[in-house]
Image (cartoon, rainbow, N blue to C red; front, side, top):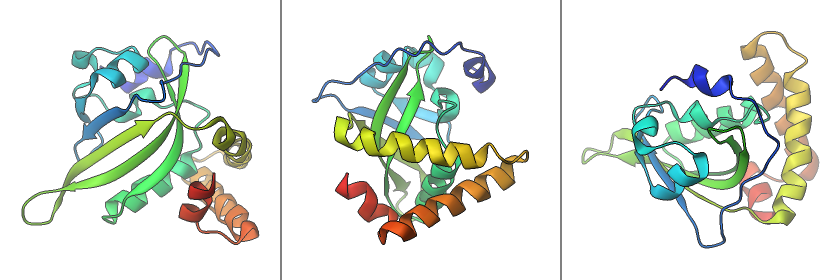
Length: 177
């Protein structure tokens, strides 16, 4: 399945929610192509296992998700560290769903990164009350720039400015939500 197919999906504005006990699990290769998708991921995304396996994980990327957050995520896991991040995704039919993602690199026996593993759970309403306005600010900054690299750079700078104002690291900010 092509990621461009997902981009042509009409957004419905309908939010899907995980139950408190559900956990989305996926694994990707180094390029972000899905190598494992549990049944919860299949159900909430609306994609079958056959559609997900081999597809780029960006297949479920929602257009309201700031590029700056994905840059932070990729930079962190590629530097062999784990990260927690709030993410809004798009289901196959155009519905959306929010998750708190815990993404970690996967290592082989010799200690080299061979892929990535993500567990995602339902975020609290309190956390989303804080994240949604933050992400709106980041998207607003990104949309001021025509080039994608410049938009990402500006979004990252805006995120850092917000964190500096709160006197918190990204990790501290996420954990107090």
